[in-house]
Amino acid sequence: MKRLLAILFFAALTFGAWADEVKIDKDNCTITKDGKTFNLYGKVKIVDAFEDIRVKIVDSFEDADIRIVNAFEDSCGKVKIVDAFEDVKVKIVDSFEDIKIKIVDSFEGVKHSRSHN
Image (cartoon, rainbow, N blue to C red):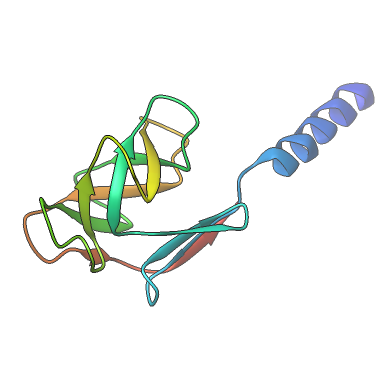
């Protein structure tokens, strides 16, 4: 029994060391992951691997409201989807996300600041 508890404790510590540290900053409209900061606006490339951040698209309880635009993606929450020359690479996931977003037609922006491991 003690051996099992020791193994579980070690596993929890190991997972915690590998977990990504993510901070969302509402005032600066940024997300910081593992020491790298990305704007929550600009040009975004959707990828299947080697992403900068993992995004879950939700209908409620989002961290940010994002509006997809064709131009003028220069303010908080406005994103243009591109195939090249991106500012950030995003992978759409169903779980283990770095940020939850809701796609909106207006009133885009970050809901609140948060930090987690």
